[in-house]
Length: 556
Image 1 (cartoon, rainbow, N blue to C red):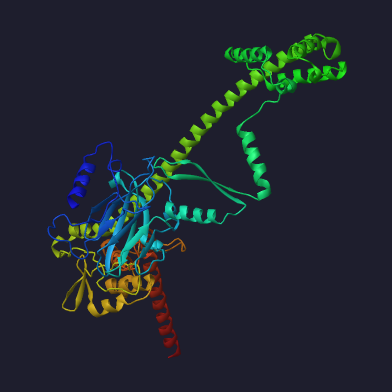
Image 2 (spheres, rainbow, N blue to C red):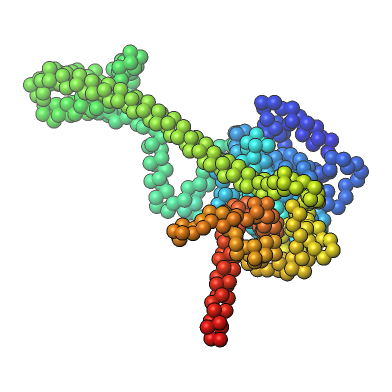
């Protein structure tokens, strides 16, 4: 089974323009995901994925790291462009095992996952569906997966014997629907009617449900039949009641058929006007077509009435002129309707283009924001090292590689994963802590700093530890004179590489509390403000001390 999935993965990589999403054949069935370099029997913690059940959907699983998996969902049955639904189970887990699942081939541009919705999860010991906390769910566009939309969520397995099931939202299967409809049908309710409308592509029932009061049921059926079958209203009903097929009827059918072939569509209004004329002639001349002995006589009498129409009703010339005007208006109306349809199609196309343009603009804004955040993080990481290397390369000691590991404490009381802490990267030597760029601080003060509450207090105390109060009171953050005082003299700026060390220490502290890049960037942007406030506090305390000394001198 592992070999088959590996072959499927290789085929997906060489798919070319077809793409890896279009060649997923079926759901995974008890598929054991093993690391690339592992050979042997599966162990506890080698996850087993399964989607071979009703409403299940998971076509492929890729092992990225020990904690991360890429999941590919199958498209809809009759529309391969839509990939939204997923539903699968995971078993053979370890207690306190933390994982990250990336559903990498979503087709929707916008999703409720951006607005706080989260996937559903349940297990064998807890069969009630629950939502994963939204803070552990991320929905974004990934360039590594053909620019598809990716939904990533973190999870912690807390019971080894449980089988966990994940789904897009609350599943509702076809079998459950049929059971529900069968129960309703067995009740024989007067206001409920179930009919077979047809069969789907997979030979499943398509039901037509009618819910109405019993009195309106017959009227509803009649109205539906009248809408489906339009029966023309004839004026010469006595001919049909005679039960004989005459030559007149055949000639009339042939005549109407030939007019349709010539492209001349006679309007219903014309027939109704002729019928009205015949009815008025019958009323005026006292004719009774129902008493005629044969259809031929009825036809002859009707023809005589039509010949006398000039004297009885309206002149023939006026009638023909009105008929021609009516036909011209019908033709103009047809042209106007065609023009409206053409305009409607153009508006729909323009609306689609505007929608695509709006989506591209929003994606460009997201990419710019992400690029700006990445630049800030890279400058924080690389800026101090590059600057110190130019000034004093021999004083820099190599820093150990920053490693991110999962928390080893097993949190069995909670159902979801806790944030992953960052390992201590600072060097301890002879009672001092090396912060980087040749900056050392006292170890005891450093440990006291770690328990400080709030970013403002932490930044101010760290600045005092690095520069000292004597240096801070004679310096400024930017080196620019304040605009509040006209004769203000600019003070020397603080060292840029030391400012970078302060930002890096605060970044490591914030990263242990949250993984939201927006929140991290927002909190880091206030470092200069905190240091300015500390310098102002120091200067204010110095002035107060001077005033107290002057007061003592005056008293003496």
